[in-house]
Length: 146
Image (cartoon, rainbow, N blue to C red; front, side, top):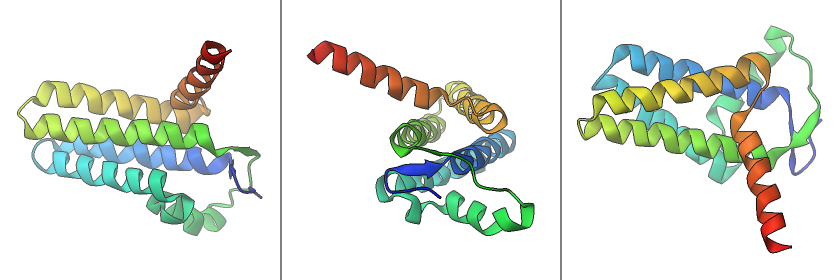
């Protein structure tokens, strides 16, 4: 069971599956519907980052289906790197949507596919690039102050 400041390690991986699947579908659908899907998904992710787990739509969906899938608990992990990673993904999806609406479809597709690839990597292997970036930023900011 996760305590305050921690998260069950299985939950961010499950959310990453949503974060890979939905933008991939948006990419396949293409502009303009895909751009709206990216924007809505980015907003949903941003609400989760700002509001916390109780406001995570994808977390709540996973919580509802977890017993049926017989997925047991993971280990407690610090929540901050996962929130940072989700914030990066949300920002990327919102940027991709904006690029679509601005007519830069090729660039929007590249940004979307990078987010899909990173989220898929996390969901499939547990390698969270955003979490690693968070750790690196923390480490370099501590050494810069010292």
